[in-house]
Image (cartoon, rainbow, N blue to C red; front, side, top):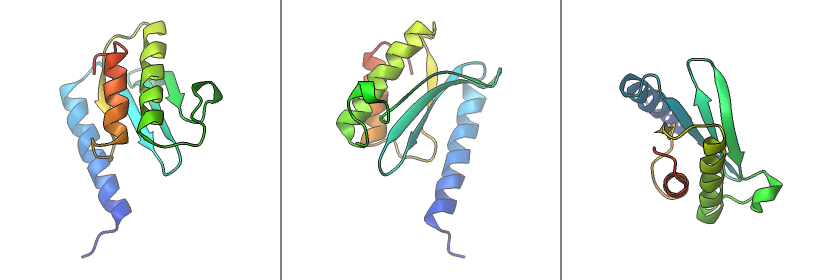
Length: 119
């Protein structure tokens, strides 16, 4: 039976998220979403069900509106690290979803680490 790219993506996303939840119970989740035109990230508290901080390439103050490249991902990663510090968060686990840890997703994670967020 042939599986579509979307089906494989959804299976990979659930597999990654479930493994991370078992290992990192009680910690905050840094969830990334990448589309063809933008990249966004959220710092989520799954216990309370709230988003504590978020950053996106759609924000005008970052200067990368409508761009989805490695530089834009690095700026978004630095922004989420800064906003996490303001929210009093120092560590979280990185939920890449169904995306491979390569290219833009890796650049975002590295920039967040350089900003002082332990992921």
